[in-house]
Amino acid sequence: MTHPRFSAINAGMKHPLDITILPVFGDNYIYLAHYAAGKCVAVDPGDAGPVLKELNRQDLQLTHIFSTHHHADHVGGVGSLKKKFGCEVVGPDAKRITGLDRVAGDGDVIELGDITIQCIATPGHTATSVCYYVTAASLAQPVLFTGDTLFVCGCGRMLECGGETMYASLQKLTTLSDDTLVYPGHDYTEENVRFAMMFKPENEALQKKLAVVQNQNKTGQPTVPSILAEEKQLNPFLKATDWKTFAYLRKQKDVY
Ligand SMILES: [Zn+2]
Image (cartoon, rainbow, N blue to C red; front, side, top):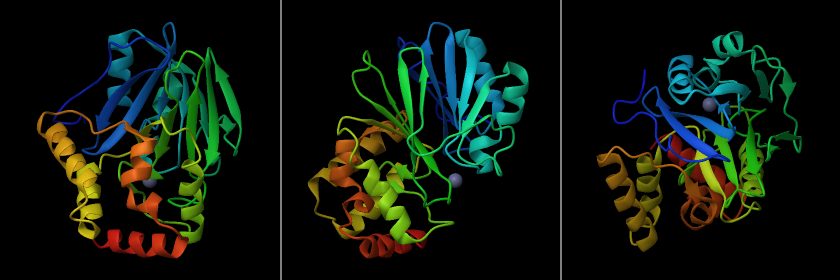
């Protein structure tokens, strides 16, 4: 099922790295990253249908799939896409991601055409979650695919790890370049901004962000990507000064 509000976005840009945003299941995002002439990778293809349709529309060959973690809404399309394209499946968890060809370990680097994709282990949402950091000489800003670890103004639930682990993973991401474009696995942005405002209702930056996000939602635009510098300024989970504060906030969000 494609998102009712919009379908493919940014499909007309030039590679590298031309990213097409495919909304699925109401709030998931699948990303197609077009990195060389006629070639692209898919990040977290939870559903094969919209990916196939878009590959066909843009006449692209799918060479790789990058999975951030094993949840079905992120890997549901892997099997049929691999069958059709014979693409290489990269991900962190051979036990729980069917069809994995290459295990993505912390610090592993994969070069595709002009781009470099670095795997960053970010346990927390799941014990084996990873993020992918993409750089290229010709890329104005680095790109970070964060799965369900970091969301715009929020973070994922801690399903398999404790607060200390997830906090350390998020802090690791804050050391990346401030101008990094953040592409998360879900669009929970408006809810996240409202949650952040509960603690800081007078914060002007959050008020401005809420207005921008509401307008994006109203006009059918995606609320991604965000910029890491903005996350460091607005995201309460990144701003937490220690893991216990972080864990308290995460617990509040679980029942929000
Ligand atoms: Zn998940």
